[in-house]
Image 1 (cartoon, rainbow, N blue to C red):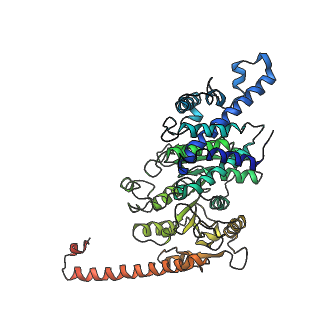
Image 2 (cartoon, one colour):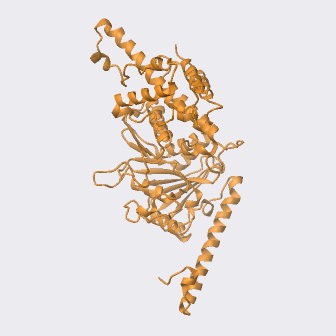
Length: 504
């Protein structure tokens, strides 16, 4: 008997709420997702066993049955066999997860993460029993819950956990409207490869697959790749892709900037058709010391205390010749900051790979209130845009919320259409759009602040946009004045080291 999406979501949330009190809401995902995944593969294994027996009856043997199962579950690891034990339940769960991972080394190694199941200070046995009782009310085999429904339930939990986690949510969850906007702009196609170097819980990769499904295209030929530094989050991403019935994927754990996991035989970073990410904003201590000779520093080494342009250059280096395109969420500071970042920004613009700058509405993200934008790069831009950069101000396209604003489905569609056509779909300022010539950007010192090129629409960001432009102008004027002053001091024989300067 199938259940509705509402019923599934309600029961899943009941399971999460069983932990409320002794477990911090920010840690719900650490415990709920492994249990959900185990319940799903266990219920599915029983369903597959019954199907095998129905077909073969007493002639069923282990070799025949193996063909019916996607995952191998050793004897004694089924949900019903373990959860009814009454002593040392947490320790039994740890052993069970280890046995399942060992039995499926190619697909499930490390998938359950590293939660402290046996630590009763972290998760008291009463909370664990409550979680089990809640999951006992849900059957998760294919006859009851389809992959689409299960995937939607997983996304529902991710969104709720993000709401509960507050600023910590930024580590694993990007608002889905931002994800859908990026995917809609990049338009991945069947047979292509999609890569997220900061994949979090895998939402961007899942959205890519879903877009193909919804448009009636064959999603099964799309290949998904991701890297995530946090072990728990990387495990959640893998479970997410499995539950969405995605087979061809590879999620690796590790530090993308210090040790990119996907390499070509030559040793260079591997290249993909679509590269999509919402990296951590303005990451400090990101590994600049290793980048002086890194081939990814195609336009220079970013500041040691700000990794934004390290992620950008990594992603641009990771896009395939001809078909490659990049979509990345960034803080607005990347559009105008000076120093090493200004040099890198100029280099990327001069390479003619920057395709578009899309200004986002204010207060969309869990982790920060810093204004953000999307940067779109293409290895091969359309001829009519080759000597231009498309600017889109989407800052007014949002629905105001108490803690966070959000974008409606119509807002997302409007901005995708603005990108595709280069025009305002509403014709009335709903999304200000302008195709700006390279020469104009050059005249502005390669400053990409949207307010320089089109009127910033949202009231909440209008003053800020103007302030950024004024700040950038004032900063440049100060730097010019200082340069003249130091030239004169040097000519007069003054020791510039007293100002922290050198004559070189």
